[in-house]
Image (cartoon, rainbow, N blue to C red):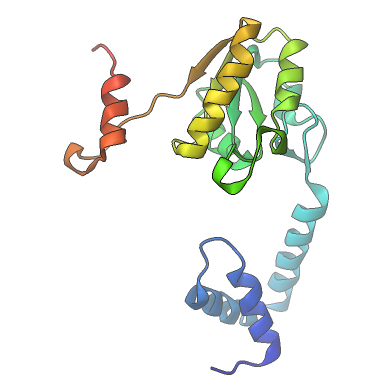
Length: 198
């Protein structure tokens, strides 16, 4: 189907976003065209601001407006624990629960031999350096529960344990509200392995 070039380009831009197919890109493009000029200008300004004004914290690697980030600067946080995640969005998810009060380290990916991503291509070196110069007693590995996340967790464990620092992994298993009959074998296996006393 033919669309005027400006809307076709807008649809193409939206379709580059993750999880946005052609139909959703078309719907978003037409919605955007119907927006008020003031809203469009603010949307464009926010996109540019997010790209220009954000940076990675020089300590933990999290997205921030200031360096070091607010979490690394917060003196009330427990400096003896670092929770390692793959992406900045993982930090946001963990902060929402308001249960964890330690520090973070963002890897910006995971080791993926199949995709040619080696340990040198993610933010591991700065973690190791950071551990040498700190009072950290435990590293919690919170990488995703897939093959790349597991490979990353095992690599980090081999690198960190010789320094005498405790390395733990987030518990995995059945999600709250899920039915056992619909869980896959790996999830059930992890649920049994990570069982807790009542």
